[in-house]
Length: 175
Image (cartoon, rainbow, N blue to C red; front, side):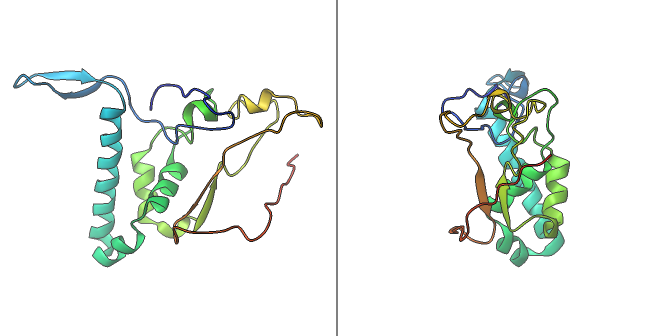
């Protein structure tokens, strides 16, 4: 997850979040010896452990029934994305929503009223040439006879596993 994402499908912005992927200190097979590990096999358990700890803190603060009522993947993903720290000079294709921020994730989960019920990510597309975050899309000329521009957007609804969008999306040009 710390490796820069490759554009396999045009318009796909992955990873969702960055985690440490190199030089992760862990146990070796020899007693009393530590070794450096790397890869998603070591970084993903760090994220899932962080989620478990934060959900335990939510349960301790608000009670078991409350934790069970809010424990779903959409809500957790919303909180992770909203709390991530964007890295300077990295595009959305390389970093997704940014670097995982445990403190920010904890704060988001403890104050759920600040999270939207439905979230679209990325919530804005800045395709102007001044935006390095949306590379390679922001460097592509847009003209009437071009191939369609495909951009992946994720919609997560923390209240329901099934949703529909009743109206067409509204596109606004920001100046």
